[in-house]
Image (cartoon, rainbow over all chains, first blue to last red; front, side, top):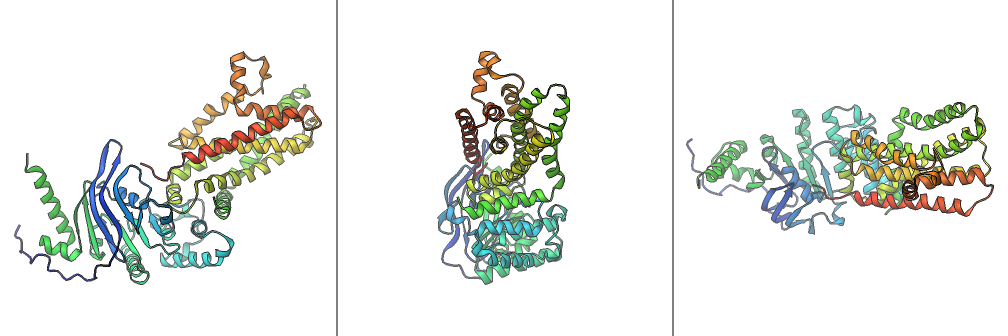
Length: 269
Length: 245
């Protein structure tokens, strides 16, 4: 295919690089079962921005997120999150985490779920009114006001994943780790949620790490980590990625990088 | 450990149960129906009903709480809520104590109903105080909760969790002295029954059945059951891992 030979790395970066990284990984390796699923990764996630984690399913996105949150076993290398080693006790109230499958109690209403998780984050009678406001806020943020008192087990898949997302928004997490938060949602809701993510990053200065295998969502991120088979193929802004590979979309850029990696892998044989 | 988080967890577990009235009804009514049945099965020999009935007052809460807790904790593990909670500032002890508290409260209601029915409805003849019967029933419920929590760590599905009931409970049921007094068993089996907590639950009930006052044996039995419950609860907390593969 013809390549338009772009001027290398001349793309204007829309947002300046903040001083400290929210997540910094050096030589990060994770073993699951007999084989390593993440191979000696080195990367940083800048603070106050939305970083997209993209790659085909099974490439290690969820494992990487679980390592950052501190729920993944058999992690080696260095992984620093908000200035502390990943999994430290002091990080537990500073990180919001949404697993891929909605993790809420099906036999409680959406509001009762939020009430409980809120009480875990901010326990005690003194915080009760603050908790009430917080729960009301996140219900509005994920647009669930009309279903707040429905049993979670009776909600649709998209509504349920929004309850799960709402739990992660409780408190004021400095880092939000969202594992495919928009899967199965309609385009309008997806756009609204991405607007919410951007306002969280812009207004609260929070860092978001959002995984997806839908490449058009990549365009909405400040930075992208492209993954394939436990390795990071690229770590750049969407513009720079497109410019660097001469592709029109991030999807094309990703495919280009995958083809390149495959050729490199095959060539030594 | 944090008391507010423990209480919030207990309240959440009870709230979940409230959305499931059928389960509550089964938990509260089945022991009563069983006692009722037992009373008329032994219609001709009231003495047998006295001894078996008292033992069963201790065994029912243990079995129900074992089942309920093992399934409830397993659901917590498989639904991802456990991973989410352990990624949040919740102590493992808060979670375990929350469950023990919620199911303990339920066990109080169950034991009060069963004991009241047995004593006043079915004429169970007990020498000692009804309060002591209730105390043993409660300790048994706590032990059941503890065993259920512990076992759920080794079950990968609800299917397996239910299979643990016969594996963990039935041998104790056979050896606890319910069918025949333990000193008449084959000596090896008697030795085994000496280290199984349910034996002490049944012994404790029999002490209340036969003595008016608090005997040293009763205190020992109650202490063994309570100690086992606390030990197994601690083991259960140790099976919770913040980091999993």
